[in-house]
Image (tube, rainbow, N blue to C red; front, side, top):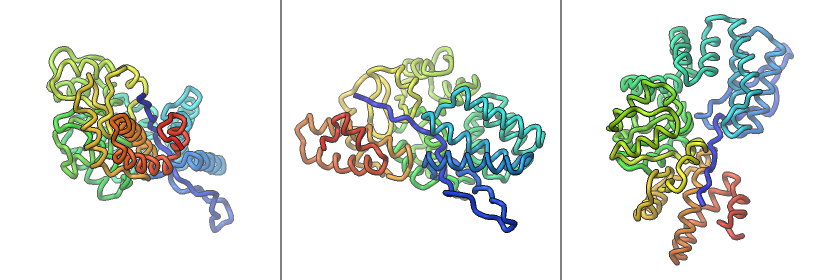
Amino acid sequence: MIRHFILMLGLLSALAGHSQAKDGNAAPPPPPVGPLQGGWNNRMANSQAAQWEAANSAEPGNAALQLNWLRSEQNAMAGNNNGELNAADKAKLGSIARNISATAPKSFEAHMANYYMEFPSAEAFVELGSAYHLAPEREEMFAPMLSKAMLDGDDAGLRTWSAEMVRRNAIAAPLQAAASDLLLSVAGNGILFTNGDMDTQPAVVEQVQQRDQPGVLVVDRRLLAQPAYRERTWQQAGATGAVPANGPVFAKALIGATKRPVYFALSLDRNWLDAFPGQLHAVGAAFRVGAAEPGDATALARNWSAMQKPLDAGPMSRNYLLPGAILLQHYRSAGEPGKAAQVEAELRKIAAATGGTQELRKKNVLNH
């Protein structure tokens, strides 16, 4: 039975406690580590958010501290709620953002805070443009500007910002390996729907900078909220007929309107996956969407052997448990104990690294 392992965005690493400044006051923690940079410990994420809140209490009215507090809170909250923000979370973040605007109106920090609050609306990208005008070199700009290039269909922008992310080592190496595995799992003319920064940004950087699967159309499902992006995606897919609305309905219509195969990243939102009962077929680090095909199991076996399967890519590593479990069951049912043993050994290793051992035992994937 297919189980979706939910992508938990924005988990951070942090120091265990405050360091001491020369004047004897507690120094603030280091700047929040973005979800692309490799910090995925949720306990430490919450600890860092608390430290930034304390730092702001000690020095109210500092916009730079406030922005770091907002970013750390947003990442911790997303981790606590499987990538989603509840009403209380949004209210707290909104309060911090308003305080930044009051403290330093029209500053870089105020514009970036508004970008985070408004994403993926058109207003968010207006705020991003204002922040870019003030400080184009700031590292906080890289991933948002890559998203903007995707939104605008700006190939030059994709090359510029993906190159900058490579130059600054803005994406952790394990995430790039996971992105390579994701693209490997998609047919050369496929359409790949991704979920968030941790799968979208590395895949785009890998595709643009390494020329990895250049024919694949990567679609950030978040940006489909913008009509212009939906229309451009529809055209790039070679689809016919009226452009559908946002959400899973877009993918449903696309499957019937184009000859190109459609794929979902394993981390796609649960409401998207639930909209396609019986139509999700794990073929590696992605689902092929549509009717079952005889070659699905063969594709899964081939891609599983070819994938790097990094153990230290946070929730992206945990996603490997799903295709591994399906492939293991396939080999067991087919009476191929040698291949089953090999996959089981890999699966145990991945489960041990990602905390998934007990879950696989409960599902009777691992027997002991």
